[in-house]
Image (cartoon, protein in one colour):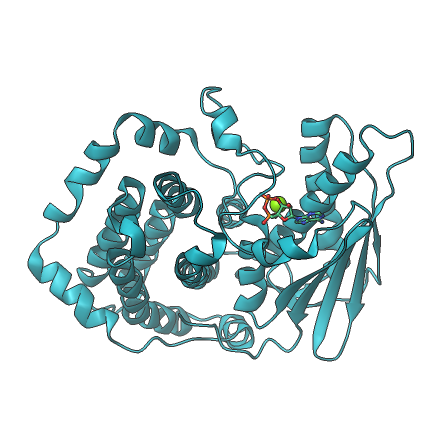
Length: 400
Ligand code: ADP
Ligand code: MG
């Protein structure tokens, strides 16, 4: 029963959908949300955050996680918990510190303060947990870190709201380039979050009593990229159908029997975002035309170093001048769904587009395990997205 739940939580990691309460909180209670926070944390806790934030983080690789998890034993669970007990406060403290010193007054935005509150609460939970000596401690610790993961579920939309608020305050003439420091901060912040959630999720999932064959926590030792790409495309098509009333075909080419070790939820999320972008581009280009919408083509190639997945569309491409913007967190050519949906009372809708988070977040997921994402466009024709996944799995987590 737990398996399903664990995987669900992980799919929502990207959270490119925005719950209603974040909108309401900011609309009606901006100051109230801000007030409560820092006062309630003691000076000694803040000092400890700074002490831990200065310690060295320790990255692990996909291969390491897999090897560690495949020798399943109580001893390994204990070692894993002890590692996390030391590692998580370091990573969390760094983010809490960085949240304090953002440019343009971003740190004072209610939504950002709320996120910092979550980080400080989690830091305190971890630091007040005594040393882990036996399997009883280990079980309590695992429950606790799982709750931390849940506490942070809505970090991405909440941060996005804070940034959006800031954008409204700023001089509208400010170019996306002027906000480069904010983009870099968000890249570091979300990358770190991916790592923290992977480590917690992996440890929790290793407690699964009867894992499906070849499953090692979040990792699938024999993941078929063709199969995952097909599922993600179907999910994207159903969002497209809901939004536009029709959806172009998506054809996936590649050997369905080819497998390699990877985290299926991460790949699903990346392909889902890329295919949504392609579907939208093709829909908007062919909506009012009597020509048949050309299918989106996904090609999966297995190289020695990389598995590369190309998502090709004939949606008209992106102007060369627009390309530098597409990986920023503030840029989208779609209407912001929050503006439209705030009063609908429908929370947590997976939307086609509009937050500008699909590409930057997908690239972080790719880079987390040593891969990358590139977008090549032919304006007037279409776009190719190249998603590179490292096949060896031996690159260390990037640790901002
Ligand atoms: P969103 O989809 O929410 O706008 P993304 O980060 O996924 O955010 O994409 C950012 C922008 O890049 C899109 O708004 C769109 O203008 C452009 N874009 C991305 N993929 C494509 C594509 N396949 N064809 C045309 N434009 C694209
Ligand atoms: Mg998108």
